[in-house]
Amino acid sequence: MKNEASSSNSREESSVVDCGRRRSSCGYCKSSGRTSISHGLWAHSLTVNDYQDLLDRGWRRSGCFLYKPEMERTCCPSYTIRLKASDFVPSKEQRRVYRRMQRFSDGTLEVGKPVEHADDQNASKHTGSSVNHVVSSSGNEFSCGNKRENKAEEFIYHLSNQIDKVVHAYIESGEFPSGIQFPKAVVKLVSHAKRKLAVEGSEDLLYTSNIAFQIAATLRRTRSAERDGQQSLMSRHSAEETDLCPKSIAEKLAFSLNQLANISGLSIRACNGHVNFYSTAKSASSDRDFPIVTLPGESGSGSQSSSAKKSSEHRQGQKRKLEIRLKRSSFDPEEYALYKRYQIKVHNDPPDRVTESSYRRFLVDTPLFFVSPSADGMVPPCGFGSFHQQYIIDGKLVAVGVVDVLPRCLSSKYLFWDPDYAFLSLGKYSALQEIGWVKENQAYCASLQYYYMGYYIHSCIKMRYKAAYYPSELLCPLHYQWVAFHIARPMLDKKKYVVLSDYASLPDGESSQSCNPESLMDLQHDENGLEDSNDVFMGEDEQMIEIESDSSDDELEPETSGLGSGATDDGDVTNVLVGLRGSRLRYKDLQRAFGPTERNYLETQLRSYQRVVGVELSERMVYSLG
Image (cartoon, rainbow, N blue to C red; front, side):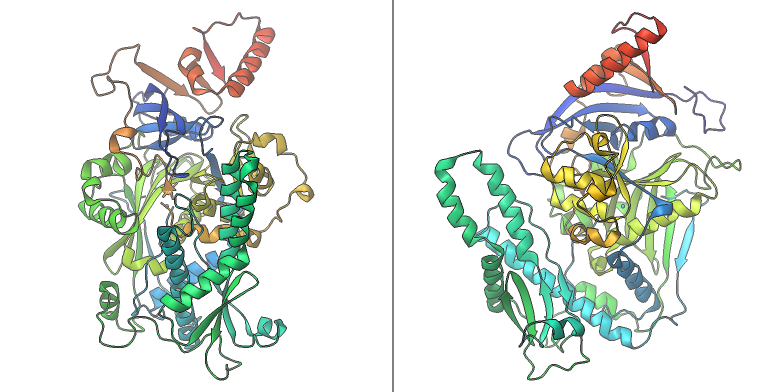
């Protein structure tokens, strides 16, 4: 089928090989067995229109390998998630990330202190006509008061990391069970107004964290799944749950933080399940939002981290130049070096596994035909295809987002970044930039309206951050209708696999979730520690098949032996001809890709079609699936 968006006269067709069902270990739930089940296709070539339609049927690509989870069978159902860019409403945290980058560009953000990296993730460039965005600011918006705010932000990151270290220590000691994905800690500043409303004696309360409640909820869900109705274990589990209630967990964390953490100027106490940080000063100044404390490495003769040394070379107040360049997907040694450092430092991958060949297969190779720009309002200036979006600060490459630009969306595939710049939350920042890119390019391509973030996996805490980009939609795995996340979420809280379209008409009032970005605050911090993006890594972007972090490189290859360039037999190669209105596919080649429920639904629709047109059905016939 000729690519409708192409100005070329050549005939462009999508050619794929059916690889059948794939079973592998799951990077999300860390199951011991091969519980992750998907259907695979190997793409020799793919038009952007065809891939857009496949995305809207729940497929994704990892290099040239296409896969779709078998939702009813797989351990962690993965729902395609998207956001209409023009409707995006940033949350307070997302606005804070953007302001932090602005301050960093202005030279008003203090970065001379060593900051431990937070594993945030989740994230297009056209050679010859690269798009350059230089981020700069007049600086009028910021004043000397920002120094105090910056120091508070830095200290909050430090406290969050200290809690995460204690949780990790409990996991290693066996106090907390291993093999569970615990949420990352979030420490919040307690405003002076709220301190006055608190109980007597809490006027020196400065910071607080509700991490104990999140850990208790995670343990409760895990224990509930493990019981499987074993009544004889009820009494023992009840005793364990008493020890692992939010109050007892907070007390454990507070005790360990006081013993292990190097935090001067604060005392740490548990109160009703919260971990609270109090000033040890004799009197807390009413106009002070954070104490004068010393971070580790801030004083003394200890050696600073390489990050601090590099940052200190930049004179305070001097503006930095941030460039965002979009280029066609191709191998770049500088990008590969950054990817290797990111995978080893952030995801703890063994160096011998982060090979150039695996990097090429995962993030460079693409089956998509490139479509050149046009002036008819059908194609954006960069064209359609696969791209790498580079983030460059003062000439240094600090992050790369791998994306596909398609007729109706920008599809974010992966992001890797320099661990020395983790304090900038580059995963979140790149997502904001990509959403903004979609908005800007609607002027050149009216159909380009959506930002696709890969898969949303509700059963995996690390993958929930994607829904914090409001208002997002999830794709129904059966009827392929888009359903607002705030409607789908209550159903996903009850069970992993849900036919979302059954609830698409649910009135907003019947949803347990309020419809605004701040109601998703509990999802936002989960981006720290991703493996997408994943989707991380994301994931997708997130320890999933696209991440390759929990499966060998060979596991991403098709099982069929004749899938190389020599696989030209008509019986092995299926030409997929997907139009915007329908896809002409052999029924026999696709029936294995559907679960029982989907297959029954499909057959019902085809039988109805038979009655209308009076054609007898046959598995050897070619059908139009609209």
